[in-house]
Amino acid sequence: MIARLERFLAALEPHGVKCIVIGGWAATIHGSARSTNDVAFVYSREPLNLARLAAALEPFQPYLRGAPPGLPFRWDAVTIRQGLNFTLTTTIGDVDFLGEVAGGGSYEQLLADTIEVEAFGVRCRCVTLEKLIQLKRAAGRPRDLEVIAELQALLEERRNLDSNR
Amino acid sequence: MPSGDSNDLNWTMNTSSGDLQHLPVQPVDVHDLPPADIFDPVIEAYKKDVDRTLLRENLKLTVEERLRKYQSFVDSRDTWRLAGATGSSHDRREDTASS
Image (tube, helix red, strand yellow):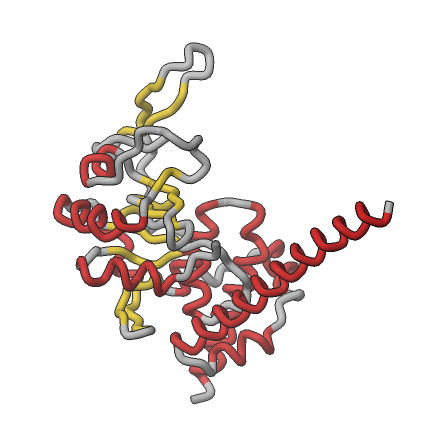
């Protein structure tokens, strides 16, 4: 199943989960034309937020992606506190919830490099295009080279557009 | 493996013993990263293949319009994938029946 950003946002927003959209969907928000299947968030590790995140996602039967079926995995605030970065399958698609991200650090560290966007009646925080490029660079994955090239081209096009206004 | 609650610890697997071990994580200075528009000849080489007309069109759209456009593409792709998979299994059945 292709995960859709708005399904996760609709699940997270009513619970007031503090999180930031990163990865491929953040690129789409900024205007990328590339295809992505990843829904990825950096979430706040505040205790209250862990409880909110657990409650928001629990109805969608989160389970560790790639793990054999039948493991005693319980999605709750204790599990989230004891872990950090979770790659999950859910009934509304695959999703990554990261407590920290390479080059961006924690939610609180990343917050200054975000913008608020609204779509489908839901508000969310999304990492800036500039920071997204830095995160992709910091990840150091060869498969991201094309992505970084497109994002830099997008940044140039946006600056051209802004300078012509 | 997920790291523990403390920010200065991380988990790793000791391959010789199979035990999990705590290892210190090098702190990431998130403010000490190269700028987003830094010149990189490798990236520049990839950039030549970027279709900027698509980017310019996307920049004219609102965020919601960008998301809808992408989801329309995904829906279309899924439809064709399903059609392809159904067609492949149909072809296999016909091959089996004719042989």
